[in-house]
Structures are given as C-alpha cells and as structure tokens.
Image (cartoon, rainbow over all chains, first blue to last red; front, side, top):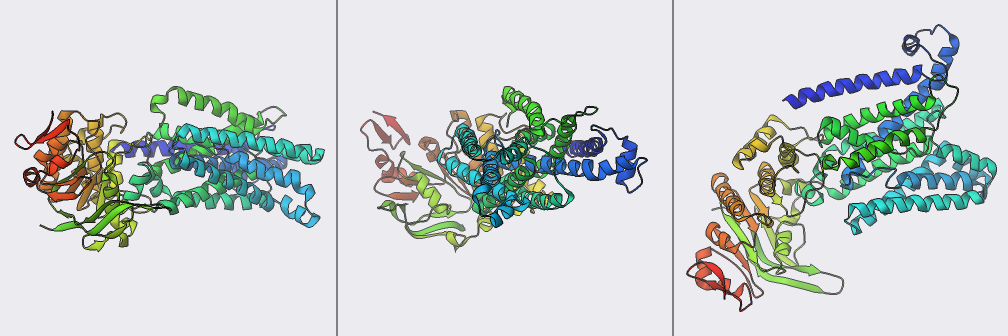
Length: 342
Length: 258
C-alpha cells in the first residue's frame, strides 16, 4: 500500500503548508508582525505591542478566516461541478454561477432605490445580499443544467456559461445607467472582490453557509465517485441519481452564492484548485479529493491574499486580480498538457 | 437449474403522448443461472429496448419482469444493484480512475457513506481481476489501456458487484476477431466457474452460435429463445435478415453472401 503512505505524507505536508500560510497571512501586510508575536497573540497571550494585537484581532484574523472559507468553498464547488457535468473545465466562475450571483447582488444594490424604504433596509442587509446572490447562482446553475441535458457536448456547456456571463454583464451595465454614484461605487468595490470587509458577526453567518455547503458535499462523496462512470453506470450501482444531483446542485449554489455575496466574484480558484489536487494526488477518488481540494483551496487563497496585501507596501490590490493572474496561466498550462487533463 | 430472471407476457415498446409503439408482444423469456445467453437481431429491431425493459430502466407496456421471483419494479435502487450488474456501450467520462479504482466502484452497493473498501471488498475486487486476468493492469489509468482490455475491466467491475445476473450491451463492438473470441471465451468461463447468468447482445452471430448456451433471436415477426442447434434446425436464422444477398447455411452454421 505505497499509495496510502504517499497520501499520508502529502496530507501532512499540505496541512503544514496550510497552517504556515494562515500564520503568514496574519503576519504579513502593510505592517509586518513577527510570527512569534502572531503565535503568542493567537494562543491567548499578550503581544508586545498593543497595536499589533488590535490589528490581529480586528483585521488580520477575520481576513485569514474569510480567505480559508472562500478558498475551501469555491474549490469544493468547482470539484462538484467538474464531476457532475463530466467536464474538466467546469467551475463556478466559468459556468456563470458567479455572474448569476453578481446579477442578484446588482439587482439588490443598484435596484434598491426602486423599493419602498422598509424593504430597502432588508434587501441591503447581509442576509438580503446572500439571498439574492444564492438565488442568482442557483438560477444560472439550473439553466446550465437544463441546457446541458439538451446538449451532450461539453464545450457547448462552457459557451453557454460564457453567454450567461456576458448577458449578466449587459444587464448590470443597464442597471448602472439608472443608479446613483454612491450605489455604483458600492457595487464596483464589491465586484473587485475583497476578503477584508467582514466583521466578526458577518463571518458567523458566512461560516454557517459555507459549512452547510461543505457538509452536503462531504455527504456526496460516494455519489460523486459513482458519477465518475457516467449517469447510467451510477444508477446501476444503486445511486438515486435525482436526489444526489439535487443535493450536489444545492451544495454548489450555496457555496458559490454565499461566497460571491460576501467576498465578491472571485475567479479561477474553483476551476484551478481541483486540478491541482487531482494532479498532486493522482486519483479521482472523491474521499481523497474532497480533503485535498479543501486544504489546497484554503492554502492557495491565503497565498493570493498575502500577495494582494503587497507586504511592505501601503497599497492593497483587488483579490480578484490576483486570483486571475495566478489562475489563468494554471488553466492554460493544464490545457496545453491536455493528455493528462481529466 | 435456477431461474434468475423471467418475463411473463411482456409487451415492450415506447409510449409517447400521441401513440404507443409496440416492439414485441407476449414475451416469455427465462434466464437461468450458469448459462451464457446471447441476444441477436438486426439493427433497430429493439434489442436495446428489450434490455432496457428487463433491467428496469424502462417500464414495460404490459406484463411483468421477475428478478429472483420478485417484480423488478418493486426493487429499490440499492437492492437492484446487488442483484443485477451492467456493462454498457457508452464511453466513460474523462477521469483519473485507475483500473483498480474502476473495478472497485462495483463494490458501491456494499460500501459505507464515504465509500471505504473493507477487506472483504478488496478481496472481491481482486477475485474479479483474477478471473478476468487484468491484475497486471491494476495501477494503470483507464484511458491508458486498449479497448479489449477496457472491456475486460468493465466486466471485472460487473463481477465485483457480485450479482447473480450480468447483462452486457454489445461487449464485442470495436474489437478484432482475436479479442472477440477471447472475450466470448471469458464470458463462457465465468458462467461455468461462478454459476452466474450472463446475457449479452451482439452482432457476431457466428461466434455466438458456437459459444452460447442459449440464444434469444429477435425478428420482426417473433422473439425466440432456444439452444443454438435447435434454432438452426428450425430455420429461425433465415428470418433474421430479410435480404436476398445474405442467407444462412445450416450445415456450416453461418451466414454466407450469395
């Protein structure tokens, strides 16, 4: 069982890497806090400067937790979609789920002016935005699903996702035409993606959403393995296909929807990370892929966060730009060595 | 000889909103354990419909299909998976599955919720791979092996599912003569060694006549189940293709072009 040994070693390295990235993302930023101080502060001790402690508790720690949730959630939703659609290029961003969520949020932020005032406050609360965004992503996913059953061609599904993307962009630009400068600014900032805007209480709601999605995904490990053989074989080994598909769709929608709502549309993580996990562990078994994708997703998102903070400089780059800069070449590289692209 | 699957007065076909298309009526077929049974018929005659109906994928127009004396429509998906396994013609979706992992997926009806293989499962998988002689491929990816090998792997997967009945849909298409023969011989060996019943559809009629215990012949007029020698003497094969260019030579036991 050399495979088992290799996987254990890989998982240990991955876990160590994740912990390191977590501490590093708290340590690095416009102000560098020594790792030792980060450690003391996180374990309940007193950091030697009170400003450091303040920064850690109120800025860096919530941001690091958000990064872990976003990275893990997006990557898992990508993994689910790649297996469900039998398409290695599927992912929440590529299939238009993020665009759907954006559209939902755009309607709420930009269209709130048309609502009576009591509804406006509800709509603009974190709950309202999550609802709108989850609704948007679910809607797009259902549409993609309907289309994918008519078109068996996997490339066609991607084109449909792309079309949804440009369609929502068009609707959003129509909406922006009618909105105020203040609303527009709010939406633009949201659309650039950000991990750092969440208070501790919003992180509470956010982690509940992501946790529900991850638990449903963990429960789908066996159906996902069956689906590797295609729908008909999966049914022949006793899979209740309709029920399994419903759970997978719901899990993907709540993950992609809530993440897009809280952190903005974040590109490429959902597409690239499952492939990195598959290439590293050389398997299609979802009981291994689930955990490796989860760990890789969190670690890579933390890394992107560190890069976007530009340690030592006073500026912060939008996180969406960083994930695209890192993710797009990964996808191209995967396509070029297509022989192993599965 | 124990009957595993039987049909009583089965009518098969399609129901659409406008009309009912009947493909065959009053079918009384019996599939017994330890038998290798082939299903033959011209293209478009309805072999797939028959297979879909007796595997419970499609509802019969009327009549019943019994699997182990229980109506197939009363089976829960999991229970059905423990009694009937399939080898289909469709291509596998892209994945990184190794041959071992693919065969092990046959154990899904028996594994826990995270799909962990018990020692018993691993033993069953290894047995299936021994019987089909694919042990040396275990660590290869499923897309790295030849069509003939892949077909054996898919049969091993069905064997690992540990069911009294295995149904294969055209397992010999895309294979050359040598591999067709070796595949048929493998199926024959499996029925003898494991006492399973194996039903397969095929267009390789000459080989099927030589190797199967029984044959189900579909013609536009009727569906007949019998031993190959009886079917030859009945002249059933003459009705298979309605064409003056091809006739069945009863002495040689094969079709010849005129």
